[in-house]
Image (tube, rainbow, N blue to C red; front, side, top):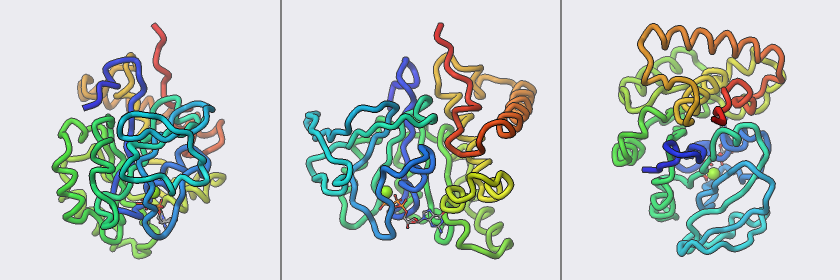
Length: 276
Ligand SMILES: Nc1nc2c(ncn2[C@@H]2O[C@H](COP(=O)(O)OP(=O)(O)OP(=O)(O)O)[C@@H](O)[C@H]2O)c(=O)[nH]1
Ligand SMILES: [Mg+2]
């Protein structure tokens, strides 16, 4: 397991799930731009590490050697020979973590080795599962094979929830999946990534997409994974946790009134690591 949370490096959050589950859509949403290809069919892109900065992107081969890469040809990177592609962005959220956009777990055209060789870097996972066929056996099997230590720092996101228009059906799916996963994730949350991207200027509409709940949980996870941040939630008593969540919620509501209400503002309400 990655040691990043134990030293000064930022935590690494992997975006995982079946192909076309919305991983790259989520990555683009978090960083507020579109460097990653999003398409209806599987995209066959190697893992992409997104870090804070303005440097040129490069490809790292399986021997650790770096090669320059043209971002517009990201999908042409040789899958067998590439460990990952490193890209940079100056998005707020990347001041608190690195994001690792993974290929689909059971894409028939891609060996699982492509993502397996990168998973050890992850400190937490945002697992995207199509709400319409949520938490398939293949997903449960892969998740149960990953280290248990990831579970409390990971979220299961039921993406494309907008495709299920009937409220009762939505509730049924959410209830079923929550029961099936138990405490294997910190939370299981429905979200429409497409609507969240489109509703950045209408706060109430944005909340209805599920993005507000997601942002709050994600912020808590980053806070817990950041060395020297406020008391970690696992170390708090029940009363302290309740007080912290209430205070954070109030601070968040205030922050949301005064900053543009975008999911990319996760960092704006995340306490910065103290320098001493
Ligand atoms: N309606 C709807 N469509 C979505 C949502 N999230 C993603 N999509 C669409 O689903 C398709 C696949 O999204 P991607 O983000 O490329 O999925 P991915 O998991 O990165 O796919 P691979 O990298 O190929 O495994 C795209 O056409 C997205 O626009 C959502 O919440 N609602
Ligand atoms: Mg993708």
